Image (cartoon, rainbow, N blue to C red; front, side):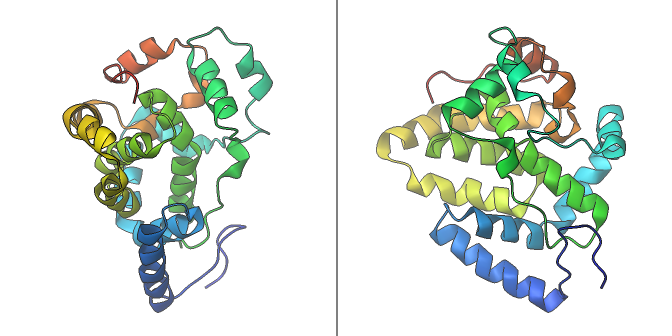
Length: 228
């Protein structure tokens, strides 16, 4: 098989199967291995990515994203301009989030093992809006926040890596966070994921200026629970 895009690594069905098993085991045993999580996502996500693709094609905004193929990195997003936006806007909240956790949109891993150019872009887009999903849901980067986001992504997208993280992640929560997870965040995030618009259909780059409360309202998202 020829390379279909610059970062593509062609692999056989057997190779993908071995990669899926190995990366799945590593992802469960060491959730900090984002390289293994990425491999697992790519080698198991074909059906889910096709589902997302159909959802995007049927949505005007999602279809435009597929046409335009926007990229989120420091070359395409003016991060300095986002810092200057009014407090409480999506762009300012995203800027604050990146600064608080010392993150950069350039850190997302390239897609390697998906043998379809269009589906590879969808996986890339999913990765590039992950931090924006945190911001939109009001979730911090801690174990409870990550588990909550994975539940949302698992329900909306059906990606096996998200579903796996949603089910196994809570096992790592302490007693206090477990109680809050079961009583508050889990019911809220399940309801939110089912009721809100598909986030893969959202052209985040065209909404930087919007107050995040208005943005959530337009997505049919309830305000997040305080202090996760």
